[in-house]
Image 1 (cartoon, helix red, strand yellow):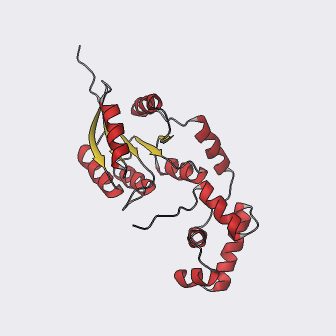
Image 2: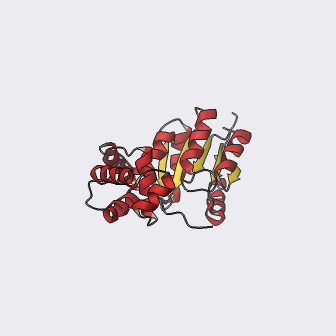
Image 3: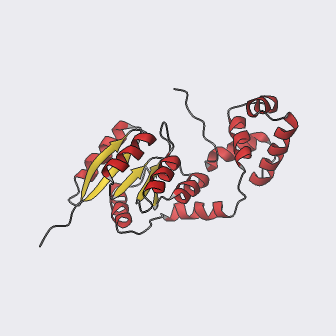
Length: 213
């Protein structure tokens, strides 16, 4: 009787200690082996192309390409790729975007090792794995209005403290148009003012404050 081949895994995360620690844990499983590790999104896409692993675990926030962009790029080239989001971000928009891009599971980094291992096996078998807490947030997101691309741009600039005039200059639109988009944002997020809009957007994962390099 021939022994089944181990599940070949790619890890993509820009924090080496976490990535190396997870690699050690997974490599210790008899039915798993780490074939590649990536520190940014572009590297993850290139290494997936090179190794074509059975399963890839991908962080949402990485340099060069975000997790969603990475998943989208991999799925465009390998439609049957089995991808798992493993991240610290639990906003409903993060969850929605990650799964919409093609991830088959969404796990938070405080998930226990046993559950991560079991999820890898489940996804490798071709099934999806959505923890109940993640599923609740996903259902909440499905009932909300989508922001347009322009509204997202305005909201992102709002989140870093820019005035209407500065937002207009950055986006090459009039201040009146900024106010129009802002009014739509307040209505869609069901908030009263720009401060509440930023707080809710950060909590939901609609925008993220990126640390300066």
